[in-house]
Length: 388
Image (cartoon, rainbow, N blue to C red; front, side, top):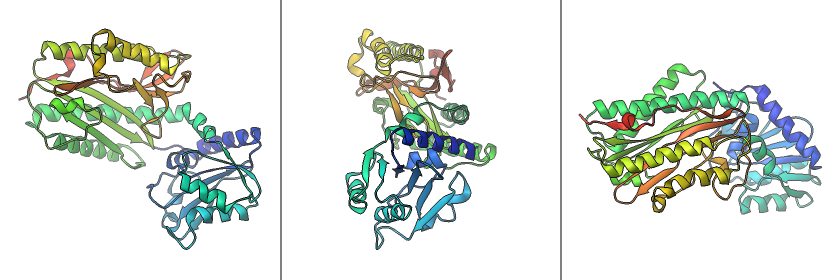
């Protein structure tokens, strides 16, 4: 599954309209995610720059290293492609891109650039095209990406289904596979979902990290982004399965906390507090709500339960081509939620030395209210696992 050429053409046309509004002759981006979004060129990002230039009129130009010259036409939309030899090259690739822009008549133009560029990259642009007026314009594509089209949401729905399947598979493995280590569990879940995706998707767009998981147990579950280790799961502990999948280059995540055996009173209180915070936070994800206000309502549930010292992060973040992208469901983001925005809702309670609690769903904002893409049960009875 993947988006078609008409999608990319519409996005390029929307960029060109905004370029005209701002009296910019073109926009240059070297950001992996922006290039995926505008041209459908999903590639392995590395030290070799890939650049996309969108003129105010006409087709975009894609500048790539020679090693991509045969792969570039496998998918997406790239009507005008030029290749440089290698990195760092006799001429640095960014300087070469500037030469190609000059050859297209843009050596004295007013051009937009994206703030994601490193200082070094920007200095090369300014040095190589000294007559160009470079204007910050990163918000042009960022604003487009905030609101997803139905085709994008369809891919995210499919990704969410695979993410839920990974959680289910993790539970099955815990119940039937003895007492695996965090690494063994993570690897088995990822292998399983990749086999499933290969059998069911055509084509499989293998972006970096087609599927992944964070598996943390016991006291390590109090690390929000703890990486899996050789530690084996044990009765009486918490187990967090934090999983994600990409379909057609679009992301969704599903995260659940499990309790291995009969929960203690503290485990019940902390889990139910987090579950209620996640419920309240999800209900706040409505059209016209400010991100900061949704975050406050969500995390206030945890504070009211006397667990405020155990908050380690915001309510959530935007999702799409990247697993973390705007908007940010956090106090410092005043963005108004709009229909078509896609976000995570994932409040957490983390008790150092004891364990953590996090529930995350992928959510789309609609005029009718929040639409959950992930559906694995979150009630206490469903997340208790009796080890064999």
